[in-house]
Image 1 (tube, rainbow, N blue to C red):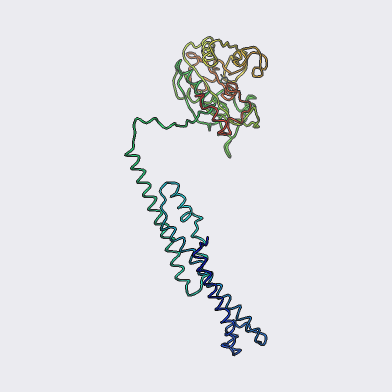
Image 2 (tube, rainbow, N blue to C red):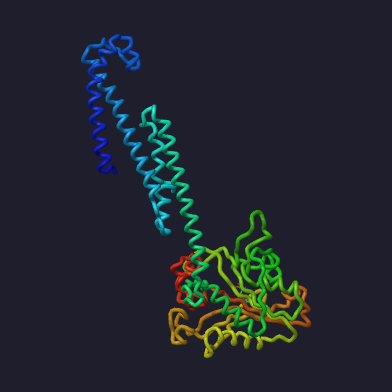
Length: 416
Ligand code: DAH
């Protein structure tokens, strides 16, 4: 840090001060000959009877400390002055250079900060001068940085207003990606909207009645066991919905038939999280209520969906099943879209993959929701999104869908 010129002046000072030490060390004891004055000079620490060598060594030490402080203080002043001229002469032009200047002189770890503490090493007579100097240097640094910042901002504005080239090729924009759940859900919703189903969205915090009782699953019904969920604090009434079927009851209570809705959304269950199960997942619910709605219509609607979703050659099959809210009920399988029925891991070598549950809406549900069962019939279906997304994109762990690791999500940039 010390340049040549400063080295030589410092050397001269040291020589000069060394000479002072010799002289003062030699003469001090003679000047301060009385014991009393010596005691006060050495801060009252003189205990032993003073001898000449003792006076001399003490005097040297004292003079040395005094000189040391003088040397140090000169050095500290030199450093501050060096920073001062560095700040005055700095001509940062680019944004990066201005940033470098900020980090060095204004930032939270700037080089001027430690100089404030150095005041303790400055001789008493020069402390005031030193304090003023350091403060002035600090202010100069801040003012210069502010001026540089303002200049670069207005220069930028000028450039952007003057050099606007409308014919220049656009900057490439980095696109985000839809989440695989969203992609799958949008596809399903899109397919059903094309045949007149409207999207219905409802609350995730539901009451017991809309989630279970209205859906023909009263309090002591064994089917509740499979859908344990999370209840709100101090409540047996309010819960996180276990399926989107609760939207059926909400819509039927508030709309008159004909009703044709598709209800995508998040649902919850008290499940242990593993590669295959999660305590939150997504479903899409469908409900169609009108006069003379038949099982045949349901079958055709679901075949249309399967072929739009998984390809025109897809076939469906329905297996009898049980759900409290439909009668009769069925589970729908589609021909395996991964191996084309040849047999693979996904279809467990059966050639078929289960995708949803469905059935004719149980008249008890229609009654619960105030719909005339003599006049209206309907069908409903519900499917999980995660399983379909996992099959479509060969994802082997459901947890990946909820961790939102960007490395995972980036892989879907082109899947929109
Ligand atoms: N809610 C059912 C479940 O979460 C799925 C379901 C089955 C919905 C049959 C329906 C249906 O609307 O008709 O397992």
